[in-house]
Image 1: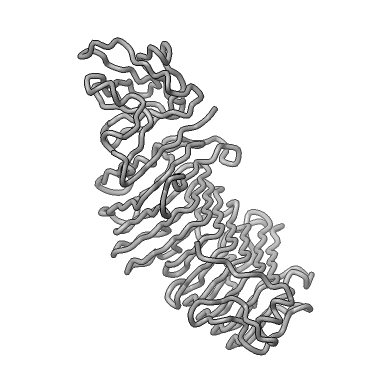
Image 2: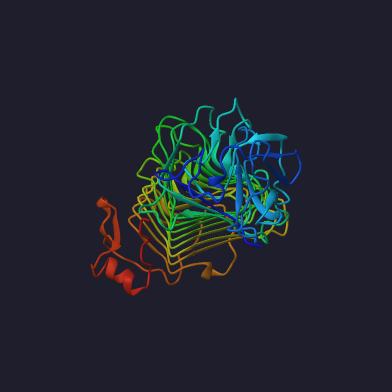
Length: 469
């Protein structure tokens, strides 16, 4: 079955009367009704000479949706799965199982497809009482954005702008179709979602996989919160995104946060800025599917990440091809304070970590976990760590496997306390004697051509830096 594409355009869309609707010509005399817990939306022709609607232009493969103008706390968006008795003479539509009508309604305005202007959002009176149109989005759907979408948060840190798919639980997230949020093909610039008060900009509320591509997420103003991008109950992937907190209040546990309960978070080619204790954290739960950060730039600006830019606190964590600059604390914290339910693999490879206010890579916790067979394995490979106020790598108290190949082919330069503590240097480490960067003071961390600096690292095949989306 195909799935709907929901289009939002700030300039050309309409929230009350979406443009390009299949049924826009039928007039206001045709309304809709449905029964709670049912899957049938019936058209009301009581005040019209019509007895049916010609919806022949609609698809019958599940790619169309119907929007009903219900109250804020009811479901509003439904995937159409059937037209009755036919598309050419339609009197009702059937909507997908799992998207049942959650109230009894009649006489409501309705539209099929069309372009909407804003993502409907109603402020409630406290935690759990907000209603967002994004809660109606379901697995397999595509959400296309064009423009800048502003939302004002008024009820504290628990409110979310994209609280995705709360009403459509998925039995197996790994096998379910992914819900995709991306720019419209006609978008002239990168779409942006902005919040001005506390709250989460994007959270996975159920087990549905979510993929976000090419969207800017920005928080500004005075509101707090915890995890502006939060993989709470389902796997969350962001590709080519900017995630910035320009607020005067920073989220405690990372501007990006991975929760527990079997979810995962994947960050590819993203620019990330903000966060108090951490910029990216994995602080909650155990037995998760872990975190991957690849080809990203964590821009700490000497302010963010007072404990560490990245916290690895769950079972499987990968940091690769990534630049971490000027963390207020450490660059990466390997945290074994939480229980480990299976072998914990922490991989750091092809990265540059520079200018940290603490160690480049550090460790805390007992390292024992709850599984007596758990093995805490850490790979640090092909990584450059420079100019940190501490050790480059401080794993004092951490038990590593005996194979020295797990930590090798690295370069440590100009770290105040030295290169390694609690672990030996790799036998194939590279030594430089001058700064390897072209112009670090102006955020140019490309490798220079100095023979004893960047050129030597380039010859040793250390990676090229990520670029900002």
